[in-house]
Length: 139
Figure 1 (tube, rainbow, N blue to C red):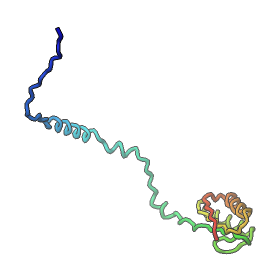
Figure 2 (cartoon, rainbow, N blue to C red):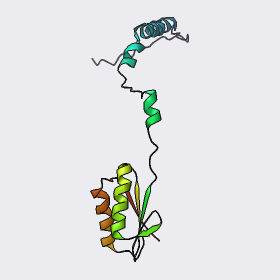
Figure 3 (cartoon, rainbow, N blue to C red):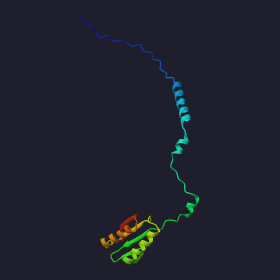
Figure 4 (cartoon, helix red, strand yellow):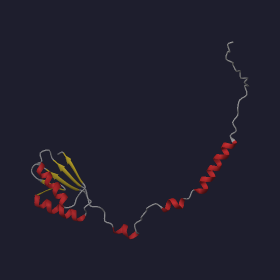
């Protein structure tokens, strides 16, 4: 005898299944209350590293010096728009570096300038401790 597969029939009802939202809302409220009660802002603020300057320190600070502009041309060198000799450039850069080592030096090289002059200017800045240097090429 051959056995055939038995087919199961499900007798379904067309009734919709409803999920009760009440337990889920209760859990959400319990979690919200738990996090509100356990959160502590005092601990968070105590680990921030904040140092505020004293009122007198703000008044004693000098404004930063202007940017030093050095032009390297085919026929010479200029500092802040004034043509100078190599010795005078060395003396002026040393004086300006004595005011503040953090000032920016903008070196503008003309197309016809010699590379050796640019290297001399960069060496002069390095000798005087000026490290914030920007080099541009153009006229």
